[in-house]
Image (cartoon, rainbow, N blue to C red; front, side, top):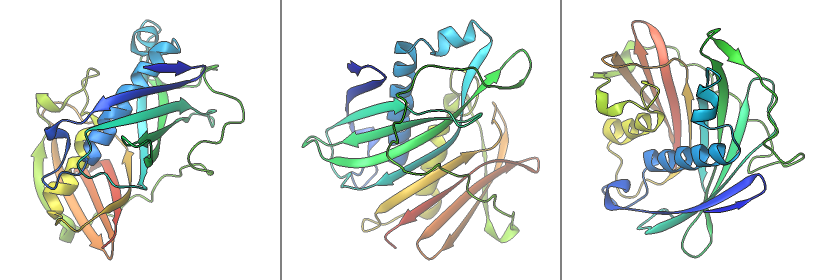
Length: 242
């Protein structure tokens, strides 16, 4: 692990279960790796889970956007660089650059975090000196929220339940598991190449929640969204080559 000021770089090994059936790195694996390195860097910057929890604060992710700019096929290792950017009011962005064994950039992305106060049950906005002033990051513009989908019963696919194996240490559905729904719902073939994906986390999912899963495809864009008791929980859009 290499730390330079307000930036961290770490190498990760790709095991078989982190690839899909065509040996491409799964979207959920990208989310797992970036979530892991974000937590490691937060610890280094003294704003990690332990430090925050002692103040009755937790980090909550609200949005992920990634663009696939190189081949994710048959990777054995990746190197990930991460760094936080200046917050925009309640949003605390963190960027990621993912490189292959040849040190070629293959994925770039950004996660948007908020800080939740467990005492007041509200979003908090503490001033954190964790970013390099003036750093732009991998995207030149702010990542805006995708438009909320309008529920259409023609899009309904199935129900799923949140089981214990899907929970993170906050007791919520781990955000990375949502991405695997794309594979299960659309059964992509070998020639489909994901170009980008953006996930919006609207409301937390808890143990035994019953989620109604909806899907919709229009040209090369795939939409997946989930409701529980008429409450929108999450939704995401995948753009591919076809």
